[in-house]
Image 1: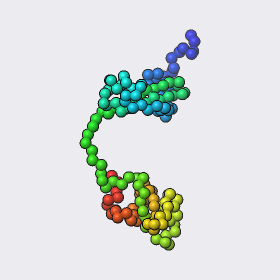
Image 2: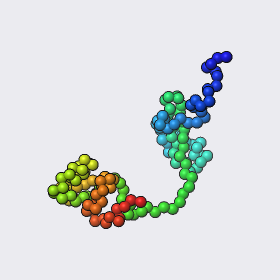
Image 3: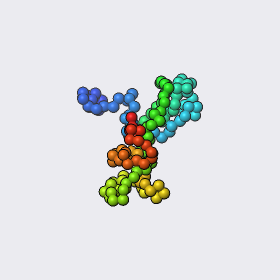
Image 4: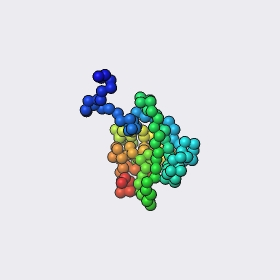
Length: 147
Protein backbone atom coordinates (compact mmCIF):
# COMPACT_ATOMS: atom_id res chain seq x y z
CA UNK A 1 0.00 0.00 0.00
CA UNK A 2 1.32 3.44 -0.93
CA UNK A 3 1.91 5.73 2.09
CA UNK A 4 1.04 8.91 0.13
CA UNK A 5 -2.57 7.72 -0.33
CA UNK A 6 -3.01 6.72 3.31
CA UNK A 7 -5.33 8.77 5.49
CA UNK A 8 -3.59 11.15 7.90
CA UNK A 9 -3.22 10.04 11.49
CA UNK A 10 -5.79 11.30 13.97
CA UNK A 11 -4.74 14.58 15.56
CA UNK A 12 -2.75 15.86 12.59
CA UNK A 13 -3.69 19.28 11.32
CA UNK A 14 -5.20 18.68 7.92
CA UNK A 15 -6.97 21.56 6.16
CA UNK A 16 -10.56 21.00 5.16
CA UNK A 17 -10.85 21.91 1.46
CA UNK A 18 -14.40 23.18 2.02
CA UNK A 19 -13.39 25.69 4.73
CA UNK A 20 -11.93 29.01 3.62
CA UNK A 21 -8.32 29.63 4.56
CA UNK A 22 -7.72 31.77 7.66
CA UNK A 23 -8.00 35.45 6.78
CA UNK A 24 -4.50 36.18 8.06
CA UNK A 25 -3.18 34.20 5.08
CA UNK A 26 -5.46 35.80 2.50
CA UNK A 27 -5.27 39.18 0.85
CA UNK A 28 -8.41 41.06 -0.19
CA UNK A 29 -7.64 42.54 -3.59
CA UNK A 30 -11.05 43.63 -4.78
CA UNK A 31 -14.05 45.08 -3.01
CA UNK A 32 -17.10 45.50 -5.23
CA UNK A 33 -20.25 47.49 -4.55
CA UNK A 34 -23.64 45.96 -5.35
CA UNK A 35 -24.45 46.30 -9.05
CA UNK A 36 -20.84 46.18 -10.29
CA UNK A 37 -19.83 43.33 -12.60
CA UNK A 38 -19.17 40.26 -10.46
CA UNK A 39 -21.98 41.08 -8.01
CA UNK A 40 -25.13 40.89 -10.13
CA UNK A 41 -26.10 37.28 -9.29
CA UNK A 42 -25.54 37.93 -5.58
CA UNK A 43 -27.51 41.18 -5.81
CA UNK A 44 -30.41 39.27 -7.37
CA UNK A 45 -30.22 36.71 -4.53
CA UNK A 46 -29.75 39.05 -1.53
CA UNK A 47 -31.21 42.34 -2.80
CA UNK A 48 -30.83 45.46 -0.65
CA UNK A 49 -29.15 43.46 2.12
CA UNK A 50 -25.97 43.02 0.06
CA UNK A 51 -23.35 45.53 1.24
CA UNK A 52 -20.30 44.40 -0.74
CA UNK A 53 -18.51 41.47 -2.37
CA UNK A 54 -14.83 40.83 -1.67
CA UNK A 55 -12.41 38.66 -3.54
CA UNK A 56 -9.66 37.28 -1.32
CA UNK A 57 -6.59 35.48 -2.60
CA UNK A 58 -4.66 32.79 -0.76
CA UNK A 59 -1.26 32.39 -2.43
CA UNK A 60 -0.18 29.49 -0.20
CA UNK A 61 -3.15 27.32 -1.17
CA UNK A 62 -3.62 28.89 -4.64
CA UNK A 63 -7.26 29.75 -4.00
CA UNK A 64 -9.58 32.65 -4.71
CA UNK A 65 -12.32 33.12 -2.12
CA UNK A 66 -15.43 35.19 -2.72
CA UNK A 67 -16.99 36.65 0.44
CA UNK A 68 -20.03 38.86 0.92
CA UNK A 69 -21.12 41.32 3.56
CA UNK A 70 -24.83 41.32 4.37
CA UNK A 71 -27.14 43.44 6.47
CA UNK A 72 -28.95 41.06 8.82
CA UNK A 73 -30.63 43.54 11.18
CA UNK A 74 -31.39 47.24 11.48
CA UNK A 75 -32.39 49.20 14.55
CA UNK A 76 -32.67 52.89 15.43
CA UNK A 77 -29.54 54.36 17.03
CA UNK A 78 -28.62 57.74 18.44
CA UNK A 79 -24.94 58.59 18.88
CA UNK A 80 -23.89 59.81 22.31
CA UNK A 81 -23.25 63.56 21.83
CA UNK A 82 -20.94 63.65 24.87
CA UNK A 83 -18.63 60.93 23.57
CA UNK A 84 -15.37 62.40 22.33
CA UNK A 85 -13.65 60.72 19.37
CA UNK A 86 -10.28 59.26 20.39
CA UNK A 87 -8.49 60.97 17.50
CA UNK A 88 -9.80 64.47 18.29
CA UNK A 89 -7.07 67.03 18.98
CA UNK A 90 -7.49 68.45 22.48
CA UNK A 91 -5.78 71.40 24.15
CA UNK A 92 -3.95 71.02 27.44
CA UNK A 93 -2.65 73.52 29.96
CA UNK A 94 0.80 72.65 31.26
CA UNK A 95 2.63 75.20 33.38
CA UNK A 96 6.05 76.51 32.44
CA UNK A 97 7.99 74.66 35.17
CA UNK A 98 6.44 71.20 34.55
CA UNK A 99 9.33 69.91 32.46
CA UNK A 100 8.78 66.17 32.98
CA UNK A 101 5.10 66.46 32.06
CA UNK A 102 6.00 68.48 28.96
CA UNK A 103 8.42 65.76 27.89
CA UNK A 104 5.71 63.12 28.33
CA UNK A 105 3.29 65.11 26.18
CA UNK A 106 5.96 65.66 23.50
CA UNK A 107 6.82 61.93 23.51
CA UNK A 108 3.12 61.12 23.01
CA UNK A 109 3.01 63.33 19.91
CA UNK A 110 1.96 66.61 21.52
CA UNK A 111 2.71 69.92 19.83
CA UNK A 112 2.76 73.46 21.17
CA UNK A 113 0.11 75.77 19.68
CA UNK A 114 1.49 79.29 19.88
CA UNK A 115 -1.84 81.00 19.08
CA UNK A 116 -3.77 79.21 21.83
CA UNK A 117 -0.80 79.08 24.21
CA UNK A 118 -1.60 75.42 24.89
CA UNK A 119 -0.38 71.92 24.06
CA UNK A 120 -2.26 69.94 21.40
CA UNK A 121 -2.61 66.19 21.90
CA UNK A 122 -4.98 63.49 20.65
CA UNK A 123 -7.71 62.61 23.16
CA UNK A 124 -6.56 58.97 23.21
CA UNK A 125 -3.17 60.09 24.50
CA UNK A 126 -4.76 62.49 27.00
CA UNK A 127 -6.63 59.52 28.50
CA UNK A 128 -3.54 57.28 28.44
CA UNK A 129 -1.45 59.87 30.27
CA UNK A 130 -4.26 60.70 32.73
CA UNK A 131 -4.37 64.39 31.81
CA UNK A 132 -8.15 64.84 31.51
CA UNK A 133 -8.21 67.42 34.31
CA UNK A 134 -5.80 69.60 32.30
CA UNK A 135 -8.11 69.95 29.27
CA UNK A 136 -8.95 73.57 28.45
CA UNK A 137 -11.61 73.05 25.75
CA UNK A 138 -14.33 74.07 28.19
CA UNK A 139 -15.27 70.49 29.00
CA UNK A 140 -15.89 69.18 32.46
CA UNK A 141 -14.30 65.92 33.57
CA UNK A 142 -17.69 64.16 33.73
CA UNK A 143 -18.30 64.94 30.05
CA UNK A 144 -15.00 63.49 28.88
CA UNK A 145 -15.55 59.95 30.15
CA UNK A 146 -15.89 57.47 27.28
CA UNK A 147 -18.62 54.85 27.47
